[in-house]
Image (cartoon, rainbow, N blue to C red):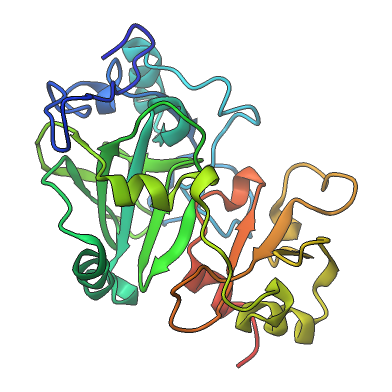
Length: 289
């Protein structure tokens, strides 16, 4: 680990050991970088106090959470002691998290991803409210999320993931399942979250993706980028945003489908903190059949 608490990429090859588990003390403080996340009450409602909160226990307390991420064990422990959750900031920690949602065929999606690209090395794994998080170290660089990479599989590299010892709104807890050192992300996984290596689109325009057309039918489309790769849309959860949209309405977008996708579904991204943990399945639930 370096002095900032980031997971250090080992140039010695894929699967190199990192040391101890990030969650052995105060949810990994001192190994990864974290932000304070609103906790949940016993009835599953969010501690943020919004009765209509659509992301209970899954959105950060601070608006500048990326810049204020910390590896200070005392700070993280104080959040936990106050009843709040903890989020691992992936960009600050220099990791990518493979988020598998078992409620949306994530285990099959994980198998399909590995059949196409190669096996993922054993690494630290966390049990979540509906699946698992697998953590991998990535080299220094700029990365992006890849939501809906496969059925039930999201890749988190430019946001945060809720981590132990946080509580899920369902009553379960995030817990360390495989207490293993972080492994290096395979080259193919690094490429999937690398902005420089973004695949070409299949549909030619985000507006022609299935999701783009669905948002158009709902009347939620506000515009389109000149290259056609992005459609600017109204976020289905805009009433929960704590800050207004940026001028030009580019906070919420639908991206065109990636090369090799079985269907030109497109994928959704909202930059507001309240939507940082949205899954693609949740987005589909907001549009008419």
